[in-house]
Image (cartoon, rainbow, N blue to C red; front, side):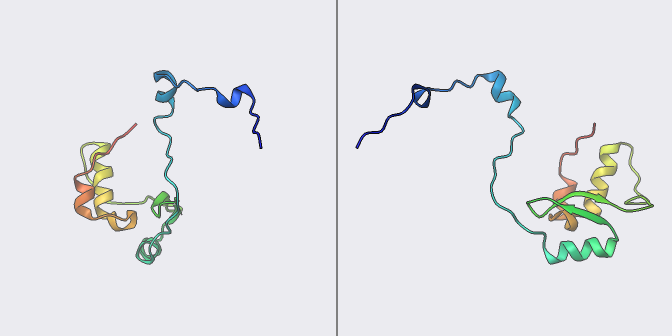
Length: 107
């Protein structure tokens, strides 16, 4: 038995820094995890609409006709976001202590 392959099948691809930099945000993780019953129950309790991503965490959270949170005081947008995450950490699937020590990036 013989196997014949075209020359292109044996070629070697070169990936230089310019190309690999454009793939820096590519997520190659496989699998899917559903949100927990506790996360779904908390979303219902908060009366928020959640779009879950494939890792069982909110991809987006919204509340029709009103803001997601009230009474959050902070000097920066990142500080306000962190306080919101601490307050709602269980919805996102982590402990409040994790949220308070996390890095928040704003646009």
